[in-house]
Amino acid sequence: MTAIDDQNTPDSGATTNDPVDPAPNPHATQEQVEAALKDTKLAQVLYHDWEAETYDEKWSISFDERCIDYARGRLDKILPDAPLPYGRAMELGCGTGFFLLNLMQSGVAEKGSVTDLSPGMVKVALRNAENLGLDVDGRVADAESIPYEDNTFDLVVGHAVLHHIPDVEKSLREVLRVLKPGGRFVFAGEPSTHGDFYARWLSRATWWATTNITKLGPLKGWRRPQEELDESSRAAALEAVVDIHTFSPEDLERLATSAGAVQVESAAEELAAAMLGWPVRTFEAAVPAEKLGWGWAGFAFGGWKRMTWLDENVLRKIVPPKFFYNVLITGVKPEK
Image (cartoon, rainbow, N blue to C red; front, side):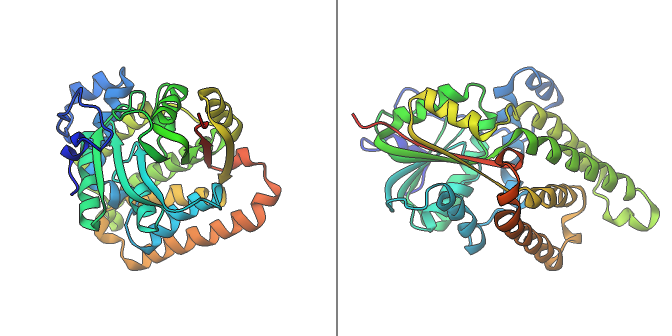
């Protein structure tokens, strides 16, 4: 059964200090947004609660073969010889469950737990898990204080989460605490310092160009209502607060080792793919969804696949890893 209350069953490994999770708050007031600009954890909650119900659509997240292959590809890249399946896995900063649920569908884990600081994201992740018929429980959780007992999980995963966490090393210590001895963590999708720089500039340029060109008479039908654009701008202001860190592969290796992990390895991916992907996603956020049909979807996904091929077969051989957009990291909890 997929339900938030499942974590309080005797064999779930969850603590019982705070069994009632807070409710989502998808419509932050301007006052709350202003307060969040000075409080990164409040910003995390407001931003991700605001995005929860539309997050899958915004980022083209699905739970079919396309995203199953993508999620499994991230694990296989950093851990090609994983002893599958793991018994129980947890996703840290689950969002809508994209990474763990798709990994579970590919046979990576038999049972799962989703955690996120955003109540809205946990709600959607559990709903997605239930719709997929997966054995998943969930908790609203601060990554620096994970509400599960020691030695609970065989695997901990996360996608694009570490860069949101104020104290990454403290969070990794928590990850190691809840892992069983010999258990492994895998984090993917973390922004590199160089990659974040060019991605943000490409996104800003695309947003500026799209929102200004669609003011022109013949293209006004391609313009979202101003209130939606204003709301997106408020979200972007929070996004600047919630995205705290960027990393090099060496940065994440150092943090994982300092936290106590062994067998630490890193990898990097997406250069040409990121330079295409960020403008594409920004354009999609700036125009009405009904304007973009299957032809656009085919262009976006096909273009990403071609750029990924270029990255893996050409650029990876000549460009240093620090210039790629995504960093991956894995490590193991020492045996007692």
